[in-house]
Length: 278
Image (cartoon, rainbow, N blue to C red; front, side, top):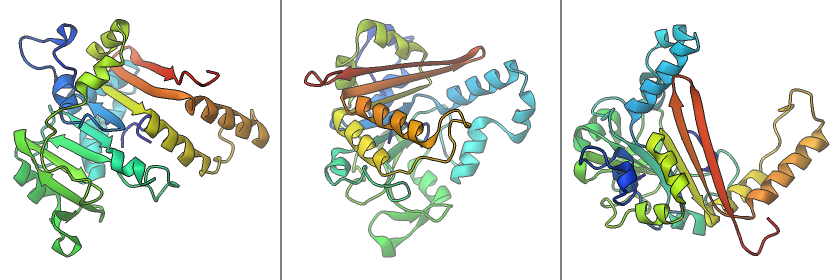
């Protein structure tokens, strides 16, 4: 459920509002890695930028002691079992191709849903694969085992990018000829495009992805006492049912997150399907 995930992830086509010093903006470059037909994505334009912003926020709020465990990006790398040859200043994107939605793979109970396709920036793609993954030829061409024992498929792409995918079929052979940037920009209004100037994370989900997310959520049991005792079980179920009904009436949805020393800015917008009561 990429729209509701935080991670575990954009590039707009030539937008004057995002131009920086004649260089392609990080967000634009990241969106170019996502195929135009993707049904949902999460993108972090700069891992180091997000990590630095989180560190500043922690220090400003008087929780600097938490940083004794390391930078947020170091903790993430340790948890994922990666590090060598990762381009910390680069982007990471995660997306679901339409094939996963068509097969109903996204709308599965927790623990059975596949991971999305992930593309990360590296300093050397082939060196990244050798340093962070173990080849598993018995599982198929392009198969590897991660540090936590997960079987995945990986390939070094152009521009020092590496693609990681849950299946051989979903592993891209190259970066897309047409990224999702123009399609994504086309659904935003001018005021919403302005949000992207400050974005540390951008998430988008299409109608197909939202429908799959709703179907998946309906398979999940409600966690015990998520309201801290303020609501009984029936009230919690009622709120979830109503929330899922609203999501199921959306044509698509966008979430933008910006972290700075003063707090966290979150903007979200959804477009309703014309035939729905919403």
